Amino acid sequence: MRRITLSALTLLAGVVLVVLGFFLSAPIGPTTEPVYSNPRVDFAPLMFVVGVVLMAGSAVVYELSRD
Image 1 (cartoon, rainbow, N blue to C red):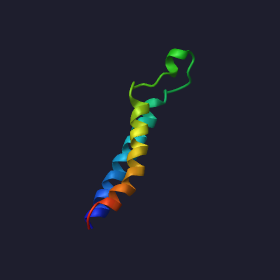
Image 2: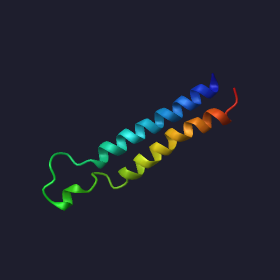
Image 3: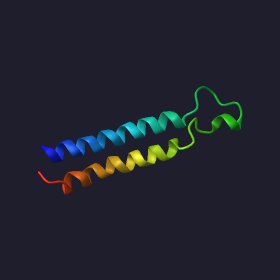
């Protein structure tokens, strides 16, 4: 049960970071100038990438944790 819980928490943290990174990267509304096409938060694309890595790492957490 412990390994399922740890794996699910890792997967959930990854999903949260992916969703936050995606929505904080996307501009709201149509972009009329190149300035508005930048992410709203500077490190939002990094949050997205870390979330994807955590989601893939949840399988590693499941395999390496004890039962």
